[in-house]
Image 1 (cartoon, rainbow, N blue to C red):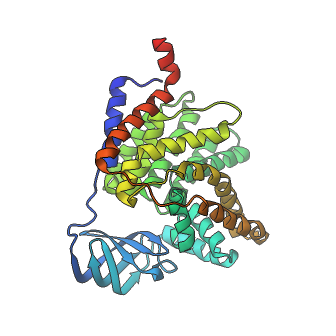
Image 2 (image 1 turned 180 degrees about the vertical axis):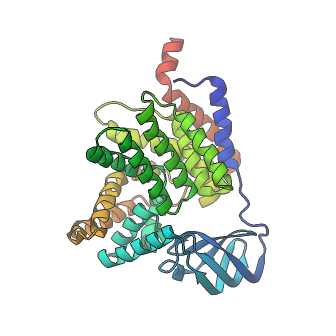
Length: 383
């Protein structure tokens, strides 16, 4: 279905609004000593993001990684500079929810079955969103190569899980309605167990929508309708979605692929299709990436394509190893270290462009991507 010019113009405006939207991180960007109380929304090897009544603050404390999970509560006494808190004392209250308990048991299972910290961290991060298990040097390699998005559970991971669940359900129960409903239930369970971040919720809604469409309707699916459905449901059930940086990147990336996406055919399509998708997302999200990370990686699309086979391999072997097939570690550990070593070859300082140069270039590149993605239609129309 070809989108009309009015819809395209509106989508350009929506994409721009997503990228230029600035959620208020804190109400006051000054410096002070104080007490902060809130819930952890992100946990990494360096600390965690604390959501409080006065905004979001980054608590710099490496001891949080092995102890806490997303959803746990913190009482922090410390010194704040802008949005960064250097804690003097921390009181942790673990979440008592069923899903948090499952995630905590799975983390303990990973420590019991995978001894190598890199392999354990990548498995926990890719399967259950346990980013606190990822060693700092490993996370740095992903960040400097423009592939950090692979460690944040989103559409790619959820899509892989959805395909595996659908295939398994059809293999066991056949191709009926029951198989699809089992797959959707599995997708919902995965999204909940992985912490229910806004980006994962978006991916789960879209994946479930696609599966249900295949069961009850069939035929070509209008992805823009699915995108809007996911956004509206997220806004209803997850207030503050648009202020979440991860949600902004997730929704912006999918919208850019809908607008500028193109299936590249030919012998090397397995390489060029994901490469082109990476270029589309990198260009489309450049303003947002610069505002968050003070730059973006121009090698990110290539590093992402190179990483995909490693990512799938680590996910598969990590699951088997955590299930007790420990001989998988013989393969999992060298593959994990090889992946990180290759990513280090792509490391470079982030590219940053002044705003007065960035936005004109951004508009030109977006227009060029649109023409390229719909070249056959333009060619037939004007020749």
